[in-house]
Length: 105
Image (cartoon, rainbow, N blue to C red; front, side, top):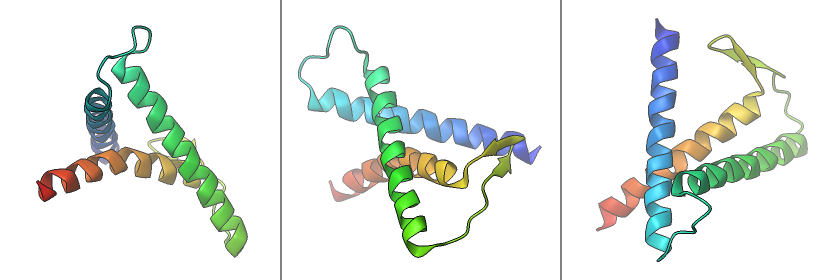
């Protein structure tokens, strides 16, 4: 049961992150590109940010020579722990950013 709850929370956070990214992208551009949709742009940016975080974490872990497990199992899916961490950080980043912007207004 908790696996389903964790998966649903993950999907909700992913949806919120994509929605916030899409809204921010629409505010930054006056005219949207005819080929690329705002959702595609948001997803592309989210994956790009996650990749950058992943590379930074790999360099950090190798620099400090920290031993981490090669795989973690979440919801019967084996994942690289650094990839999971970077994906979660990339999903949470636009949500936290949006909350900070709203707080400062």
